[in-house]
Image (cartoon, rainbow, N blue to C red; front, side):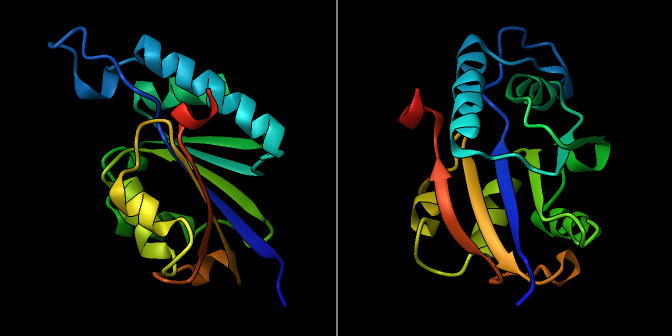
Length: 167
């Protein structure tokens, strides 16, 4: 059986709406978002989550979330992830080399929630994700096969952690 692949879907932490004239792409993290990102960084360290590859949206709030996490691995900041649909995110993940066993994707809702629901088989943590995928939350999915084989219903959603649960 091929090595299990791990996919960590992280929604960026809470962004600031303090400046209503600021372009959506340029909105920074709110103070609550900074605290949540630091709490999630502690969770990642305690859980031993060290993705080999991190794919991050170019949006400022996503990059600021990434900076506070310091998850390790190769980091790619990609403009195609900002505003991507779940289908586009799957297409991007299918281009990950099969030698990579773990990927963290830092992006936005509603695509992150829809992607997690689409990939996950029924049961487990899926029902919690269906209810809400809040800012700063992390869904962990596991599947067998190559990244090019990733498709709806091909993964198990093994964990779902929200910042308010850990910090």
